[in-house]
Image (tube, rainbow, N blue to C red):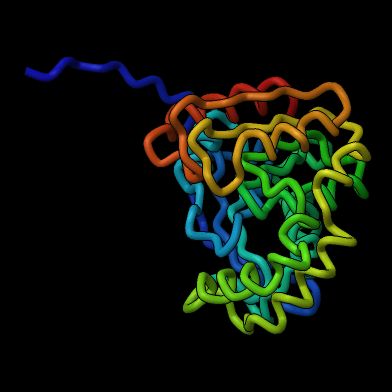
Length: 259
């Protein structure tokens, strides 16, 4: 016979599909938020490449704990307007934060960013330029975009990324990705940008992550300024497939303290 488990819900939530302008296009997304129009803290989640890991479970749990959460899709990604480009990710993150601040139920002084994998590029770029973003969480961050664009790897990396984009990202080719990778190596390299971030950040990694290994993520963390926190989740892979509860608790605890 199963054991009765008491579930404590701090608030009632709702979700709604939304869209907002960005770079001359319309980006799609979904907002999870507590009921009511009391101004709450908020975060936007910058998804990875190509965005298969949606983090909707994380968004829902944050909303249950009074944090408005926006899951959005970059230009050309998952139905958003325009063509996808690694050079346009920061524009999407910046406009997502601005959109959150415009909402009547969001406290504009308490907006943060959360990223997964390649989402570290727009998060680090946006936060390095905008000191009003209150905090950031980087989950399994792609820490060094210059390494992805290394001369002996760039062609293979571009082909692999192009194959991953099929049916998910609009306008991607190996040729365009090669140009994008060269651009982000020089303009959006997280390990070079995080030292410019002046607010608290947390880096979360899985010990069994073979996509963004802990050692690579640690270099990004070491480059960041205090206050910061390093969390390694034992046994977790890149998407935290069997460790979602642990991941969500870690992120929620951080945001509850710093947002």
